[in-house]
Length: 126
Image (cartoon, rainbow, N blue to C red):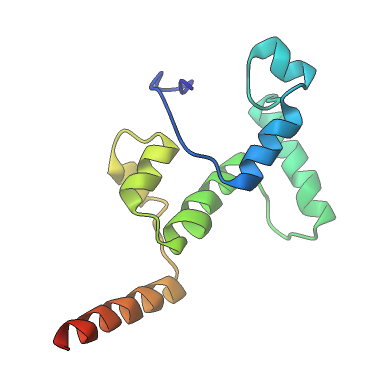
């Protein structure tokens, strides 16, 4: 599929939950009429819906599309070992420096990575 902003082709394998969501909306009238994968409204409308979801879930900060994108980049990908180059490509960034903005990795991830490094180095001594 072609990215709207950059017009570049994007081919990204989907996780099972994402595939289920896309399948759910496959026959939605807005998707059929516009050839979009999801019934996308304006960014403002999406942010209104996200605010409602946040209220229902008692989340005490504003959830926006940007927040969701940032969470995907950090919590879901980078903190689970996906290389920054891969995340950059998935986000459609033309420059990895743009992705580094998202890469404020948490302390726990740093400790975990250092433990892995320690283990690798110890195994090499054997």
